[in-house]
Image 1 (cartoon, rainbow, N blue to C red):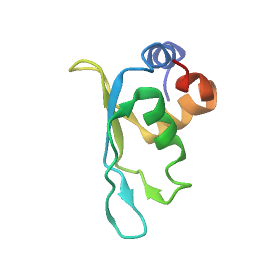
Image 2: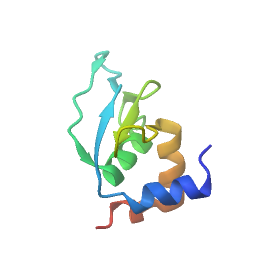
Image 3: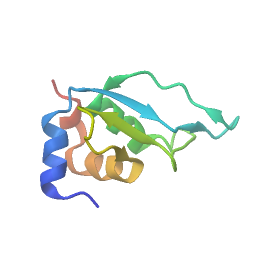
Image 4: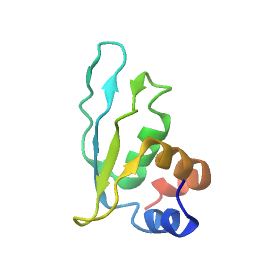
Length: 90
């Protein structure tokens, strides 16, 4: 579970470029090609990916400088529940 400070830090950099790795298309059991996108959009995608038919058990969002902790699907679900559309604002 993310702390309030960690969640606020992600919100603050929501426009940073992010890469999503480890998403599997459940229908055909292949890695899903997910483009680099803004961090807020990456959080939204992973938070809702299971509904769209993706397996995100091994998924992570990479962003920021080397050493920045990655976000897992459960982190994205928590962030989306707390901040929702604010993550998509410019």
